[in-house]
Image (cartoon, rainbow, N blue to C red; front, top):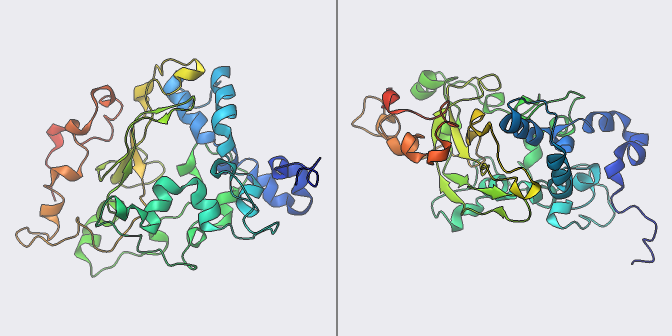
Length: 332
């Protein structure tokens, strides 16, 4: 094998302009600026927490460390259309065949598996017995590209600061219209993200460190509703929030011992879990309430991100998303 492959570039699409652009110039010109390629979101949020500006300049310790340790996660053309991503140990998907549609499990969830993939496919049922696969999951039909288009993946030659800015990201409203016969949709449409009622519990993580340690805190499953800190990207007032594992010491092994502006971004972030169901714990009827779901939602403190849920070091960071004592209870 070594002799047969001598002198051959092991991952030619890393230089997509040279190796792919001859036939796919339009797609390549978009992809080289896409979030999938640049991973700009990591740089934007690091810069905000490090120096309170989204635009850099980025310290050389961060750039070097990211390129050496994290940069391999970005998606080249081949890692979607020919081989398993490097982060999932590589290997060809179907011999040397180029696949127009990426394989959902060998390409998409090979990178996006621990949260999105396991949620969508129902793989978390071994940990949380009652959790189900996403209602949209239909094998060999409703795979990732059913919602996520090639245009979204490849980009559009625009430079986006982070994922939620990308044009073409799917929303529930793209397929599901407001139903006039549903009192709950009529009451909450546009104010609540669909996941606040229709998602199940999902995975959250604590404390991530570069240098090979990765996430050092145990992952856990919960469900939290809070205020939307990204109204410029999604207009909902209330959204589901997922805890992300950033800590002040995340980059210590790269020589960045603190994030001075750690509190400018929440550590509980807007999320759209991929585990939607028509009926969930939030939609179960409560016949004693004026609205059937009120007792399971409006007065159910466990569903909302409350001050008691926060680590003391994260209180200020989550001021914009937490439901404070003075705002409780959330009335119907």
